[in-house]
Length: 428
Image (tube, rainbow, N blue to C red):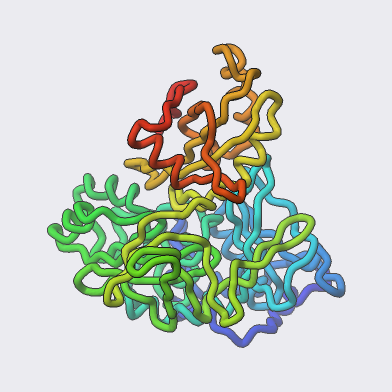
């Protein structure tokens, strides 16, 4: 047996991650039950790669198994031993970061371009400290059985899994038998067609239509919606009336307008910053500790209404796609000039990626345009891939030369900026 703390079950963390009694069921995934006692034993015995000195890549634990139980065991083992753990898509594994802050506990991935995943580093405490207020906000307790409806490399689902195990509740993958479920609005739409709904429904990843909430509540389900971002964690959570208000411990400031503008957030739940295979990057943060991802909100008497992602990001299927990454990748295709990527409302995904290309001589003709679509396809994951492609004569710019995405979006909507659509919209 390798020389690893797992061999003797020794752990270095004093933080509780597993709250259930040994005899209680912790996991029921793919039809296989696992008790808390058995899970604790697996976590204690899990062998992790040796950690060299400093913050070299070998010090980071990789968790990207296709088996959800194995992935959770790896994550829990790393957390309990104070090792930073990176969770990424097994079908699109990310390179280990070159370095991370010393206090990093978790590295969750957000979408990147050209196969490059981008990591967000956060302390373990930045999630763990929100577990108790989240339980109060949702009404979740140890007696619940909680179903996941998405992959664990998506941060909202990973948080839900770790929170469930902290509660000592049962984590499963069958909404038809669960007492509670975490899902996106798109998944909720599908759940509403089922004969049975869970008693508690927690929704995030995109704005929840009022019709979806009302339909679930008419059938006796208690619905909790929350708004946040992978970089910020929780920002707001719904009250009994369904209105979003600041999550406990979170301060929200509106900047750029009297009632509508960019959301700036200060809380103990913020991430440390971005990391990738070569270098990192700081969150957009001011001197007083407020951070922003550029989301646009309305704020009226403490009630938050999310207007959508700003120009830098698209929220699609519960994941965040950075438009600048998509733009850089597309502009690297021969014949493509300036590109502007926008978020477009989508009935199922919440938002989808819209690529607007500025006309160039090389883009004249159906064959040339089809070649661009063919060249772009392998550059992106299905979530990142644009679902609509438009060509315009000129993409508007600000006085400083930056892309004026708000003007572009408005012009496309009201017809003042003519466009040609290339290709058929991608399947939903």
